[in-house]
Image 1 (spheres, rainbow, N blue to C red):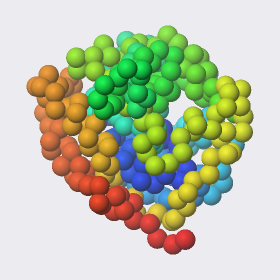
Image 2: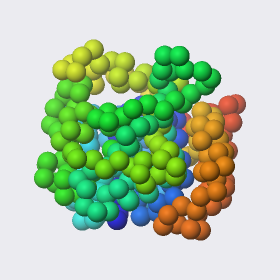
Image 3: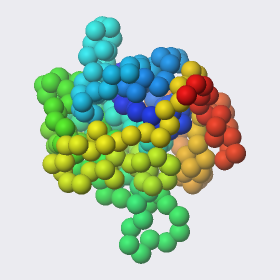
Length: 286
């Protein structure tokens, strides 16, 4: 099963570098990552299995942006069997795509976990996050959709509403729970909140029917990025350590990739310390 991962981005090159690093760390190899920057900030570029498209013309909504990426892929004549959302500001653990592929393998219209790791601190929670949070009908960033269902819908819901994500999830039901295909039913998606140093879109959404939240997002970082170097940021490194250092995860041989070595996979991208964050993206110009 070939999975096309779609990543819309706008003025967040350091977070995007981290998102690409998470993609590179996936144990599922039959996947491509397509990024669309409609700030025109990032020079078009590509890696072995990822590509950044760039335009200075902003799309009217996030759904329109997803659909533009699908149209671009179709014009190239590139094939895919499923699409996975790949948010630029969240974290994806190595089994996220393999669990999604397994969940979709029997012809299900969509797949997503029934629980995720989240930066929200629940009432009475002790210690540091992330914490496990109920995710049924929520967390669009963890969604994977079969090509058949996506084509039957005509792509993403055509709306500017703040609840487009929940509408999209609902339109793709029923969804197979990817936790059934994850190591020890551990979520492979981490929702970040308030820890990235950039505004979160949910903070701009005053109500589900609000339509101007998208236009109100204005990035602080508009410097030109000529070369994007994928590397995990300190928070991602910390979360990978907390979850992957568990003995029950480290002892697993991942289904479908018995030769997978997490240590070797991370060796080229797990190298950014707190004092080296400016090296994640090399920015030049105003």
